Image (cartoon, rainbow, N blue to C red):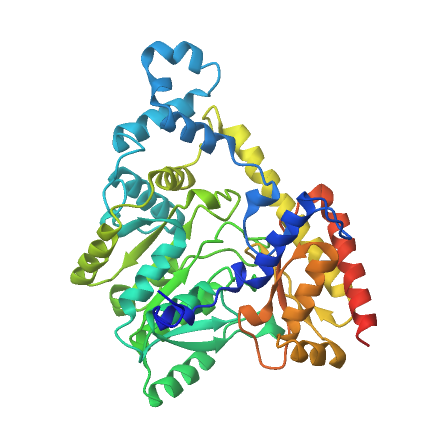
Length: 480
């Protein structure tokens, strides 16, 4: 096997979040451990939304239930007296209930996911949106990403199959479309108006693509946005639903950041399931095909490594659902540990439960800290010369635009790099902070950006922000 003989589509895949900068960050970590000296003492991975990597604490109730499921001997009657001194009673009872449905975490589950957990997800969706969900139309997955890839694969008939994706976009979409040989059909978010989405532009884009021979089949919406952090209004969502219905395309709604909402009074999260069911035209509600995705990796949970998620199918043909199930069964089942976390995410402790006050305090503490860090980093970026940054209404990222001196742009060209990649690499080498250049997400031609999480620990945040400000000042002076 050689690089020339492998599947050529694999070579077309690019995934900036774990690309060259992330690889260099790992090299720097190793070199620091070996005693090599740099202007910084540690590498800060702001390239990926991986909260626990940056020491966000796991939610105790979730870990308690998970550990009991992993150690079923602890749930035996003869051990209750001892175990009840270590675990709250609601964690014990939840673990017992889950184990009754699962059997063993070491066994394969139903390919679509444990039926009782899918029931929990359906109830969560009903409580969130006010409309019922069918557990048989819910698929548990290895994080949201595998669900997205399943649907993109399913939608791709040939190289003329087109999928509308936002620019900027999370590169899972462009990478997967490259792998499946489909055609990305980009539409642009408007940075000047807070990364808003203009439905008139969507119409222009799909009309042009179809005239050029692309069989446009679906629209991807990331809400709240990644990397841009915007949150759509209910009115805008109704327009999007109408657009998809009129154009006869599937709506793929990536909603993994639905609890990362930092201006809930002004811009609350509304799911596309609710937007669809609230639509005033019955035919739209009953026929628009919608698939929405959620995950345990984001929000205040941050259990990225456990790989849990789900997608819900609405108005999909029964024969298509059979094909999705067939594809799921090829992988046998999603991992059971992730499924357990999906159950806990969708049915956390309630008021009156022994764990509720502790759970509430943990969630609120993480949430308020994220809000503070988001605002502080936004202010830092907007203080920098030649930098503008829209606020994060949601998600866990900021995506500032940077105006780079011509000397920096020319130097980047000499190195065969995008200018924002050159800037981001210089940042990493000077500060140990790893961000991702905007060129990895797509951006309006002639503009430069980078994406940074605001996940570094709050007690280190001032030091983190100062290092970024000093780097930027030095970089601009050096290249002016």
